[in-house]
Length: 205
Ligand SMILES: [Zn+2]
Picture 1 (cartoon, rainbow, N blue to C red):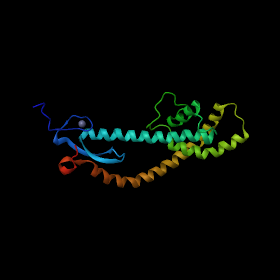
Picture 2 (picture 1 turned 180 degrees about the horizontal axis):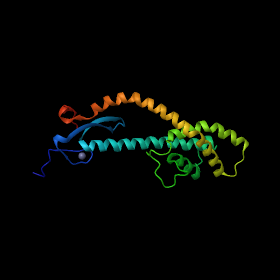
Picture 3 (picture 1 turned 45 degrees about the horizontal axis):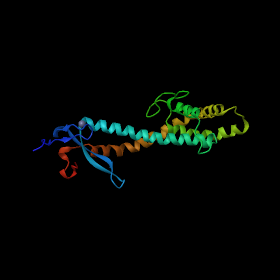
Picture 4 (picture 1 turned 180 degrees about the vertical axis):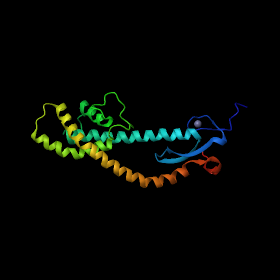
């Protein structure tokens, strides 16, 4: 009676039938009803699991970047320009800061996330904090005609320090990556377990 239910599992990524021979399981973090995140094993095609990991990595990177970008904007607004929390960051400042991210004067209409060119928001934030001493000293002596003049001056000082700061941060990141590499190798082996070797009790549907 009714339609015959396929005994084949569906791929968590593409939702197509999964044949036993190209089935891979991977723990996927899912949010439970109580708000906690738990890992559940899900089944994928071999190629789909790679695709799934790539996309989620990108999403995670974007979230991280957005988070640091918010800090960049806040710091520039309150600590450099001396505006209130409730003020909005001038549009020209947004464009110049995003220009540092993309390696252009301003970032009008270009993609500003998960790109390799320009400087990372982490580098921009760290440089701003160092450059601000110089910026604030200059502010005491110098008069600026308007916001745009002041913003350009601040970015000029940030630009002066950003290359050396970037070099320093990259060096630190490389050292951290080396220690991480050993840990990652161990995790990957456990991550891509072929279905045949996994006990049935892990097969959540
Ligand atoms: Zn698939």
